[in-house]
Structures are given as C-alpha cells and as structure tokens.
Length: 297
Picture (cartoon, rainbow, N blue to C red):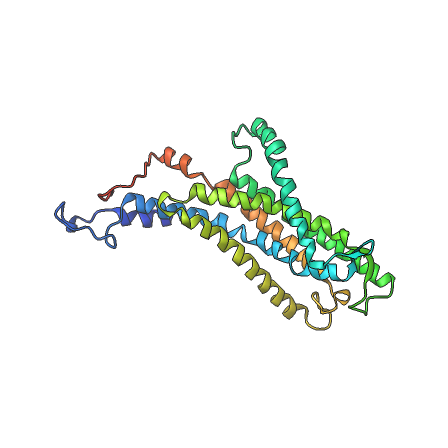
C-alpha cells in the first residue's frame, strides 16, 4: 500500500503541466521528469528492502574477525610443534569459498536447473537466501563451540586465567568459519548479480556502491550491538568480558542467531513481494529508452 502511494506520488513528476506550454518551452528537469527517470527511481526504491535485509549477514561476518579470533587465542593451536596464529584461522573463509563455488557450479546448478526450471540455477534472491540461512547456522555453531570451550576451561580450573591455554583444539571453531565462508560465497555473488541486474541502465556503477554499503553497515551494526550489549549486561555478568572465560559470549552468538532468523523471515517476505525488473516492465508494458526528448504522461 505504501509503495503504491509512493509510486503514484512519483508518477506526478512526469505529468506535463498545461501551463508549461508546448514545444517552444525549454524543459527543466526539476519541473518535469521523463517517464524513464521516474521508473528508474522506482527501481531503486524497490531494491531497498532487499538491500536492508542483507546487512545482518555482514554483521555476522564481522564476528569471524573479532570474537572468533579471540576464542582461538585461548585454545590449543598446536599442530605438532607448530603453533597456528589465531588470526590465520580466517584462511578457512578462503578455503570454504574455494570449495563452495565449484560445488555450486558443478552440483547445485545442474540440480536447480532441473528442479526449479531455471536456466541460471538459483536466482540472485535465492542465492542471497541460502547465504542468510548459512549465517544462522554459523552463529548456532559458534554458540555451541563457545559452550564447549567454557566447559573445558572450567573443568580444568582455568576460568580465572585469561592467558591460560585451554586444552581444546582450535579446530572446533572451523565449522563457524566454514559456514560463514560458504554463506559469503552465496550472498556476495547473489548481491552483486541482483544489484547489477536490477539497477537502471544509467546507474550500473551504483550497484557496487549498494553492495559495499551493506558490508560497511554490517560492521557498523556489529559495533552498535557490542556497545548495546555492554550497556545492558553491565559489569557484574557481562556477556563480552575482557576474560572470555568469565563472559557469556555464547549468549551474544545466540542473540545474533535470533536476529539473523528474524531478518531472514523479513527477507523472505521482501523476496516474495519483489518482481524482477524485466518481468515487471513487460507486464506493465513499459519500455525504457535513452531519449533526447522527455517522455511524459
């Protein structure tokens, strides 16, 4: 309803005012827009709900380079006599992407073509949806691995020593890195394909900007959540303590899992409502062209 009202409002920008005269008038784009201009603005507005519901994925992604690395610093990172640097666990992002992309191309796409009758396999919106689901699973895995880490710390009497090495292999953290990496492979390609496909022809460079803005906002939302959690949980029973063994990081991961699930539900609603540009314009009988003269209602 709100979108319909907004579209009706925007349509007025391309309605010629009789007082403006005929062909001898010098057209002012601030007074009269072309039909193409109006439709392009509508396209961008229609993409905004999809754009907004992808931000939370990058909020989850931010945890892999912050708190997950902090977890790794407290765990056993030895392979024989070699100790793995905690920050190097992000290599599982790359490995996950390198595995996910060919699996998608060679396995998922052929199956999707047959099942969904789509020559592209999964549509951009479906790929984004898969990435969001994987991010939810990643936060569930992260919460469970943190609970296991805390049990190991307490059972060995190391809960009060933030510098102690807990006798638990750091590879328990691999599932959360792997799931977020696989989710990135789907979400990244899905977002870029969606924005490139749906952005107006004269605004293709905007597609990259829309994608990068979701990534930047994801890290911003992550910082905002951390601040809010610090304020709400206080100093007595903090979720995010300086000593992870005394905190409740798993609750923070559960919070992200819940927020990601709610966001996914919103995304499904937005994706269900969204109609791809080519199909919508064909149904409405609109053909957008680059014209020298204004095309008005």
